[in-house]
Image (cartoon, rainbow over all chains, first blue to last red; front, top):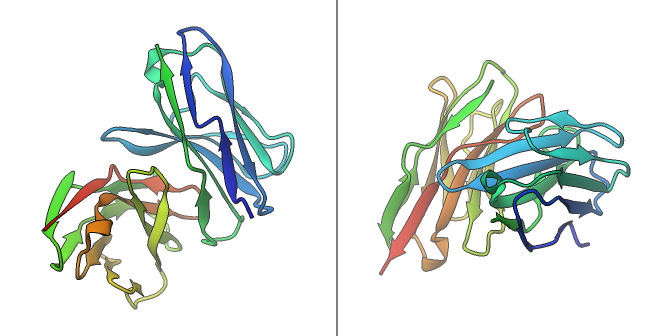
Length: 113
Length: 113
């Protein structure tokens, strides 16, 4: 099993450009999450999904959109990238029940110049 | 909203010695889980240990153990017989009925010879 796969692993964007980060999981998990990690701030929740076709805002949702058209995929979009969105992005997934455990992807390092 | 606080940005321990990382949390829920995650330079999030709030017994995984004080809302991690491979960022995290992980800001652990 691949677990949680994030693509791409690295990306450099110019201010104002758009891009989509893809998260794919093969564990049949209901819940999926997008986090960003910044120095000294830990991991902060951007958006999450409790099932196919559903999404919800997390702690820092501004500037991001998400979609979950298929249960195994969770997409994070940046419509107009800003330097403040320079970060490492992590996707995670879990079953619905406590606490079954969370599986993380290996992260995407995004730099906006 | 739940919060997780790690008050030690950096810690250092000599090889073979014992170190304790601190974590406090705030919640009004009675049913929740607490985790410690390790993040080495590879960026991968690795589950170290988890604790169910309803269990009074402290969780233990080999050289890693926790001191869970529910009334004080404290959840510290003890690493015994520290090894060079233990050097990493350590994150304390909480999840409750909303099934979202809330992280602390992390503690960077250095292991010296």
